[in-house]
Image (cartoon, rainbow, N blue to C red):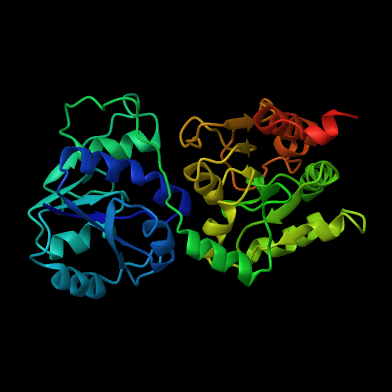
Length: 347
């Protein structure tokens, strides 16, 4: 059985989509799963053993271009028994329709009658989590989802990881690594202040740790701001990798971390899929829909009256849901997860 997945457009969603792939393989052990998704997602999909191949989708997020979607569909014609759509948009249903895939499954979304012939009506009360909404598409509409739920788990190639370490002259083994992910594409209302991250970084550096900062090119200035808050001597123990690595390198390097502190972002879900001890910082959003899925997770938030608001920027201009979340709360959460080095406990 060959299955085509129309993948989501965000890093975190793509990571969580692995729960669907696992469910499909549990039901159909011999199935082949291909994922049609933006090219940036290839490093994530290549680290999922359930995926046979990642198919590059050349159109950007929000681009309709019916002619191009028809052309891609015709190229895929005759290759698949089922298509499963994770986006809820009308345009995402066009390519599998043009491909003539016999069974086309997805949630109702944007008026997709006719384009999908296995159209599901979402019961948000029944499936409050995003992974449940993904997983449910692997089963018949009346089926109960099997528990425990599968978790995303990205597989790391040791040789590629060593290559990434060499490329950035990074060393592990002698000092623990704290990975910081201070960015968030969603907006400022997800970004914990740089000065708070700097306090956490200083605390761990004084305990003998090194700090690696991850993120996109847009996050690089924020990483530099974190470094600038530190005094000389400590600043040199912080490596700002944001915007310097590829996504593949970021995943491989993050797998070396002893612990991670992250905003609610795609990299938070990458860290969880690497099963790293993780402190997830929440401001305008909530962990109730897309919580990080790992064994050791601490979710910290202020819980003030206006949070969660799910706004990209603070409607009041104060960002208190993040500003009032003190670094000591994150440091304490880290200590609960990974403890304090024995050398420090002796003093």
